[in-house]
Length: 507
Image 1 (cartoon, rainbow, N blue to C red):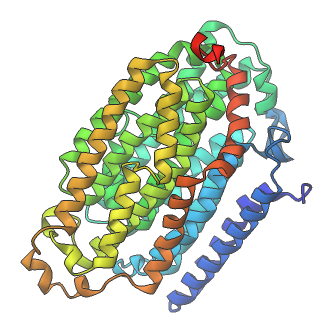
Image 2 (cartoon, rainbow, N blue to C red):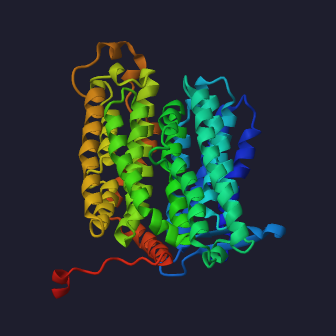
Image 3 (spheres, rainbow, N blue to C red):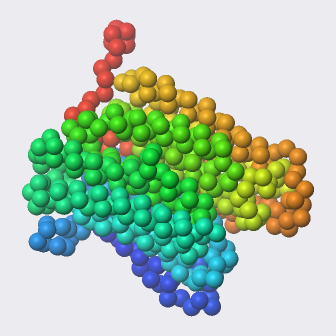
């Protein structure tokens, strides 16, 4: 199966499905939902086959396919996957069918076309897969920008009360970041030998000044997308206004394009600039951990609260990237996967509560666990995963990041540990105020609040919970895929893991 063009098919298939769903009769919304869901399951099946075909001990980039595109620029449809991108492709393929199932009734509250909603989800899947599979800089940039379009319409057409404001803000922030990247992409082509091929550019020799400016262009775009402090303000608005399913994809996957871009492009292509700006990256990550957690504690809107927790979590990923050790780097990539699972689950469960209550305000709940005990239990599990409780998958990645950072930068690791304490505060506060304590009398008059977890909703949350628990106790299969890619990235920038101390060496 190694000769099969997995990546072009994987990127193109959702787009074909989107076109098919979009042209289904509006009078048959159930058919559109069924086709979109089955189509996404086929993409998941193809991704599973690709994962099994990937050789973790083989070459760094596998499933490489390159087709002609713009000869004058040496731009090609080049796709390839290493362990880092493979993990993200698998996360996309898993989350999209889960989100489609969770969004079964989301578009019904809008006056917009229901088939169009599910067509947009499949289109978004195609662009997200393209971003992580691209091995041509210009192709990556195109997917990076086009990805904004379906998410803009998902927020602006199907979101909540502030949807237009949130959609425009999301689009403008990302577009500005894309302009910084475009300037660096052009500079990279001019100074790198008139090519956009990633492997050719890896061998390019830039002057110190040029390398730093090129790095900054990419880094600003990725820092906005992640988002790192102080480029984060678009996320709470977009996360709270978007439908729950779209928000889960926004926070669970789209944000990872920023941290993935730093790992794939900033570090290998600009190694000296990466080391020069690493202290800046660490400072921004640390501020994000504390700042995001403190803001999360003070939120009254559940969806905004979850969005702010992501800002704190991305701080840990940033620390793992710029610590330049294998443990921290592998922990950062694993955190990208685990954050997508845990925060995706949390957003979806919050969406279930909001759909029942008709409000996302914490004050409109209180004692809800007495009316929907199973849903409240799932909410508790999602919250514990979000605060990285031992036994859940985020704990493994957070531990790797901290221990890998501690070996080279003890003050950063110690300060970051404070984020764990704050995470416990905002998660436990959220759970206590919404599902525990005295029952809010207003809930008794809300008929929908009497409906506990349905069979469809159980099918949504079960695979995410299972993966969170399994990877929490046995992450080895995923780490075996991630580690070689991280080690190759560190080799690109000339970094090695610190040698053991004399006491360790004596053993």
